[in-house]
Image 1 (spheres, rainbow over the protein chains, first blue to last red):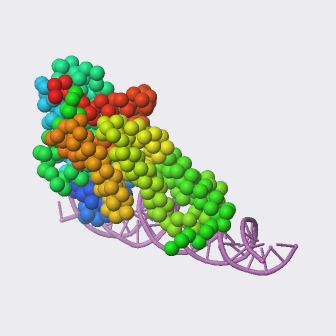
Image 2 (cartoon, rainbow over the protein chains, first blue to last red; image 1 turned 180 degrees about the vertical axis):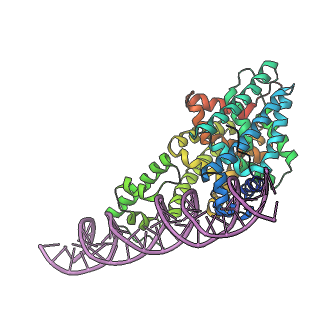
Image 3 (cartoon, rainbow over the protein chains, first blue to last red; image 1 turned 180 degrees about the horizontal axis):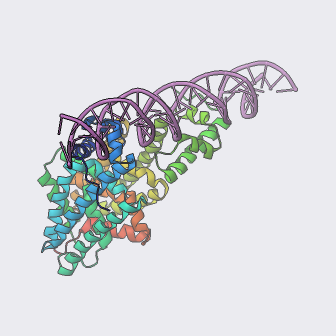
Length: 193
Length: 193
DNA sequence: AGATAAGTGGAGCAGCTACTCCGCTTATGG
DNA sequence: CCATAAGCGGAGTAGCTGCTCCACTTATCT
């Protein structure tokens, strides 16, 4: 089951393809043609299809990359002593991701109700880790006891919806957005609790 | 500029096409073929294209329908005396819409960063009406004074994201979801405000 | 009922794009 | 520096789907 060891140039081409795919998907959306990706990478389409058997596989690889990165981010947040600090740093890291992978976050959210088994299982891991983070806050007494933990986790995750973020970015800096989101998530909108 | 008065059968066909489009889009997603819609409606494809010049126009008509309905919903909420009551009834009405038009809400959210002028302008109207609702709550003293009004409006709107709703629907009834969302939106997650 | 214009159906066309095939190029090991 | 197998490019193919065309049907009006 070990990889057959790629020739040096082949390996380089693969890397350039992945970078190109990110760039093209970011600019043209996930419906962009494979041809354009190959062109940007400076290789023939055949090379693209030697690395990713189908277009679908290419997209899946990209989504998987984002999911893994988000998974690591949540794990780091969970490792923090204070749950609220964890949530804050999660938001900061998540928004940083949006600048790089924004286009994929839409897919990331959509994949929540798709049945592409592979994506779904990772999605569930992410959600349950987030749930654990919330649960920890409840146990420590810093988050409400009567919280709907799953909904809370989902609402943290949806802070990362690209349309919202981009909309706000037009008039606010990242710091301001994080603060406002934290404020809303933690304390809500009402005056009397 | 007045409509040329359709023949009775033509009018009926148009209605059936719209219903079929809703049904097919709901089941197969927005990428479904036009042919399938025509078949479900029991008419030829030519009839579909006589009513909607292009596929795009058909989709646009559907999105517009959802936006208009949402617009009315927000206006009703805004007309209510108490802003919090308004938000609560908005959520209830919105979730009811999700059962019927769920598939379109994704587009509805996506259209927020697209530049299809027509959709965007309606989207802005909806958002600013929601902003006004929040503002009213602030003025009445039931919502925090230091709120980021635009973000608050956006977070109310994103309560309607289909993936979230569908995910929760699997284990909770609508009433429970509305309560949990209201609870989170108004009072947040933290114990000490 | 007959005239007629409004509406219809569906075969087929056109354009688009994922993917294949194979003759050629080039890295690699001896 | 050669042999060779690993990798490459890109023209071309296959299949899919939005949309058109026009011979035919049918609602409507008198």
